[in-house]
Length: 459
Ligand code: SAM
Image 1: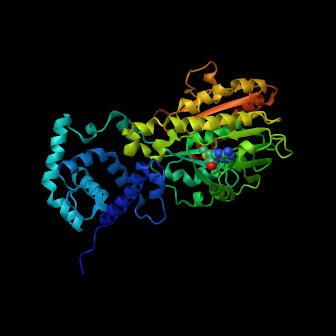
Image 2 (image 1 turned 60 degrees about the vertical axis):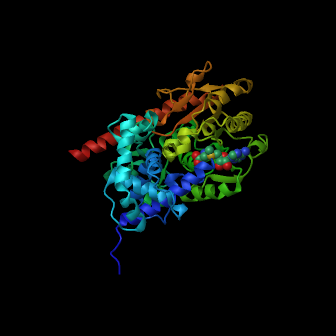
Image 3 (image 1 turned 180 degrees about the vertical axis):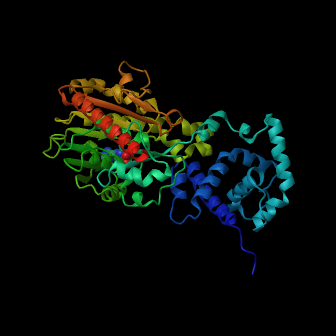
């Protein structure tokens, strides 16, 4: 019997398989699955090591390919489906550690070690750099060094923030300064298999994506509509903010995504949500079911350009050098016209007092331009823009008078997804400012209580 192969031998092959999948999806311009979602599949072993190796291989892929091609490593090889494994092995040989001859691919790469190392040195000299990171484009260096904290939203339908904090304190959890039901943990904290996640007591949600429900801030007894709901993270957030009372109607157009929405609602244990397989644009605002809707959350399909860092798509080659991908103007135009139609429709519900429009896009075309294009329609229905989180420093792009009411987040600057949030408030709604003041004093009260409790523990 041969010697036992080291764990790294298997991890590399696992990484090569995932790499093949993401690169294939990437070439077809189709987000088949994000890197993270492939790594966190149950069948994947040693997830942390796998994620680290895949990220590093992708980070240096252009450099690795350059070196591999310059020495002709893949030329004349019979098995053409193994390019990715050779990229991973080259990565480990040059940038990580000495590789062991645990398989025939390892043995082959080791046999070309001198040529690979010489090509690497030549490349550094040609680019006049002394460190490997000097070979990467500046922007990609910045994105990769941005370590985004792990945010979790406490599902207050199941557990209080203090209870969740106590259970996660040993992992370094703290309550977010801005959003009272959000906990912040160190970057890289892996909670995918944590019992609190599996039972729906906490949701792995970025900070930015928790902002829209807080901005809508419905009263517990309201009728609320989540216009484009699946996978339902914001739907169940709304249900929790409403303390499980009132009613949230969650619309989803696509049948396949409906099941995901239903699963989220079930996991959250929310009883005040009604899921509908429905095109929001075809919903009759004057039908008896919707006449009384007081708040609408519209988080429509968008380009998702703000989530590239979280999804780690910025590591993919196409995100960096394919101009067609970056300037996919037709697709953005199609999305923007749907977004505008959906926003106009939301503003036409007779009893609606607040509409929140949000996207996880950083494109002006899907954000400020959409808001600006509906302003006249909004005014005719007596809506004006409300200021989204007035103390948040980053506002909408100043492309029209009023854009200062809008909120933007940026992955690098704010260490979360790139997001956009707009709030429309109906002028007759007098409750809004009063409610905002009441809520912020409640948050301050809770913070003081928590501080006192902590102090007491220390004494
Ligand atoms: N708000 C969700 C969350 O936080 O979990 C994410 C919503 S996602 C950005 C947009 C969703 O809207 C997709 O599931 C898409 O299928 C759905 N959608 C697109 N067009 C729609 C329409 N006309 N009516 C209802 N849902 C639609």
